[in-house]
Length: 178
Image 1 (tube, one colour):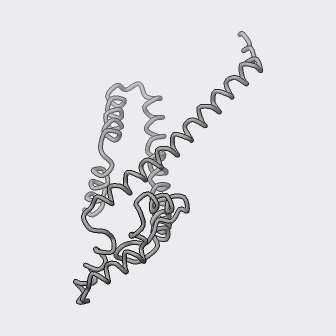
Image 2 (spheres, rainbow, N blue to C red):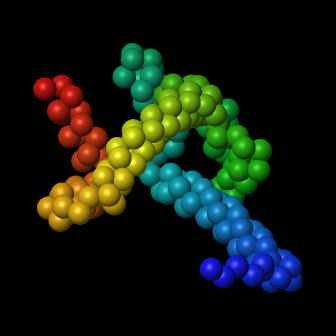
Image 3 (tube, rainbow, N blue to C red):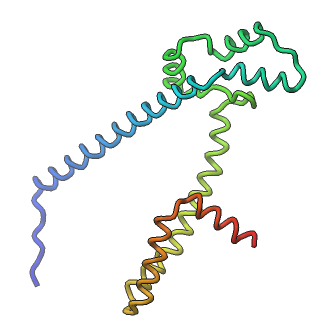
């Protein structure tokens, strides 16, 4: 039995440097992607007919309030919609200020915080469930010499990977209510 030769320190340092470059490149790419997606979504919201002030006041109008053009202009100024496009996007992006919900009149950061906690628990629960299913199935598949069992498990796992998440969620909801 031969012993493994240790990796020379120079080679190990080179690998660590390559990994650090890789990680830094990915981090920069992630930040650039977030900025571009933010700009695209913000731009698309500008292309929608009407703005937040008009939608809110139209909602108030359905509640019986009489709305004038002066009311719309005051609301636009209050929401900062009278400022130029890039100024609004940059000032919000730099400060991390997502503004207010058009209809609910609640800070978006507060809404996101509440939804994030719920999403985090759902994500952790689904990850735990996935591991509780995947580990035994993988162990059974690796330990078994039964071709039918292995092919069946492989088919089910491929279907699980290929099926869109929303369809799987609908099926779980359907079967859990039955």
